[in-house]
Image (cartoon, rainbow, N blue to C red):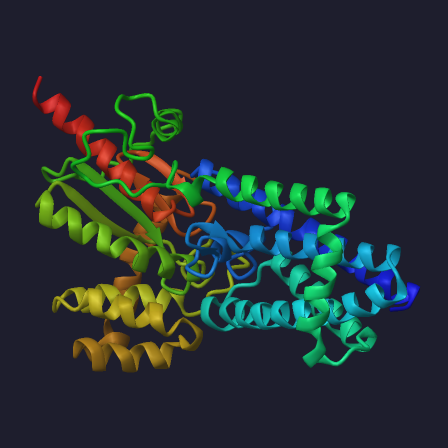
Length: 407
């Protein structure tokens, strides 16, 4: 491996390690603080948070970003070792890097597909990692000069030499120990603060520890409360969602929270009331978003209201969430007729749009900045919470309402 290639790989590995480490830090903050906003959450389609908290963001509770940092660290160690050892070792390490980068390339191709095609979201830090892995793969492929079939034999011989070199053993031992320590220290990996809470939990809803001094409870109590005058109708917990049917985050929270609402309805019938309020980011009906880009959101809100007349609003909402990329007045009108059997969309549009604007005006009183925005018993949450914290918030409010009722 030439000096130029070695330096290039080291440079790429350092950039990749820094990006993976930053991603791990953001992921850690999201686990620890439900209200944390990542610096790389630029828009609904450019968001690190949505990627990290998706099913593709972790493996058995360990962040993929942390595993990426470990991978880049190993690449750095091998590349540096190749420059300090014999020429034979340098050739061997070129082969090891090719194998390692091939595995890395397979992983980033899968993650890139999941991010762009499945989640429809770009993570800037992740994109940097993808580029550096591809670069390392190309450089190591050009530098490798040993037959791939000989790599296992060469690796076995090099491990034997490493075991007889105290300095190499020490470096490898320290790296392995640090890796294990960081993985074990990550909260999600050991079932710490993000443990799932049930509505009947007698202990702390987030940490599982008895008492009322949890980090989540302190976070929750520190939030200001607003009053919108929406009737609870005997419910102990009122959840309001200012929603845009063309908003990817609104669709994600809808799918994430649906099982939570269903479980509470089963265990505590009528205790949790969920109301979806319209706040389309469409200048056609929302003057507070003059540059809003969801040009079918007003029509979508009207369609759900019309479907509600025949009890098909849930089905209509799900169709809209699942077809966000194809929403237009025509497609919405056709879907309303097919899903709900409602054919008077055009005739009822203007009158129904006034009801949508009433929700928008209500949102304006509390200065809605983004969708979704949730109001849980008066606590305003921009963008929603991770499902386990959303569950914990409802459990906490139910517990407190039950305590007040018993007094």
